[in-house]
Image (tube, rainbow, N blue to C red; front, side, top):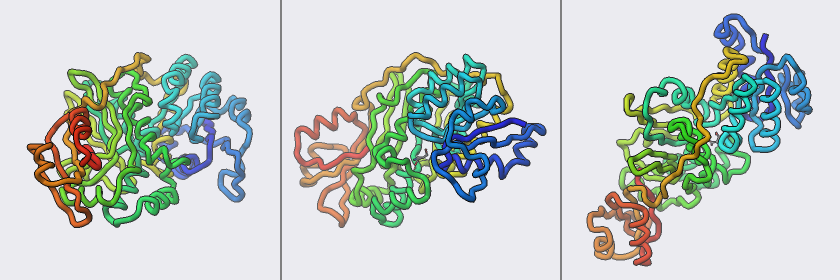
Length: 400
Ligand code: HSE
């Protein structure tokens, strides 16, 4: 019998309880007869009538001081008190499995080191892409490849909002409320909407892919709060959809990383990734393109990833699973140097538009008298130069 504790009985924590208890038979079979028992659930709240009520505690010490607890699930979110609790548990020789991307992006390197020094594991599959097992793929099947690109839709809430705005003509706030009601959104919605959640996720995935630490604070990030119905209408008119894309790319000149709303064409697999679905595209020099997609948020999909880590820990208790996170920080190139085509909303005449963007395609829609300009490949810096020379550019969105 392996005893497990769950810290944080919210959307994900309750999902982990359901998966570990509901799939008990399957899990025991996969552990060759060894059973997993949830011995403690830590939360400040009470849950009268809930199946976890009998093991509920309000005191972290009950978990830390229980010598039989070998694996702890951290689904509290946020940095405090999750960081202190996790560190103490790892130092006490307990494995920790988390969905907390904020904590992994901020202290993951240190916590992984503490875990390995204690001979245990700190695993975080659920921190990126919800139920999509992308970290296991990067850390396992693709470890022989030179990965040069990680790209994807890594935030379910913003993808849900943009999908509803595109397919139903729904208003931004209405779609956000729905995403919150379904348990997809972060406690503070700015983390989703302003791209900070995707920023942390692309930093974690890129660190694993490239083997050098990428500090999420250095990833250039724009959110979707600036996207309006005219952008959506223009995107439809040019056969594209707007998605919040997180991307990093290793080039001969260096590494770029960014999170920004982009207009994606039908030829891109991400075009059809709608609703709360996430997708991650990886490019390796041997494997070529790999795309993984599935539910990026929500109780059971995220719980599936956490519970999978619990099984991995149970299979290698006191035996750290090797990984190649390096402490060496990777410098990122300025995003304004990244070559890209743009969709520009222009308030002026067609001849002025053509004068500024010689090789551009122009689009008109009934919703506005602005002109839509699809530019050729250029750098953001050259677009900024054009912009500063004219007062006619309303907005520019990258093409993905
Ligand atoms: N708020 C996050 C999202 C939850 O919407 O993707 C999963 O990390």
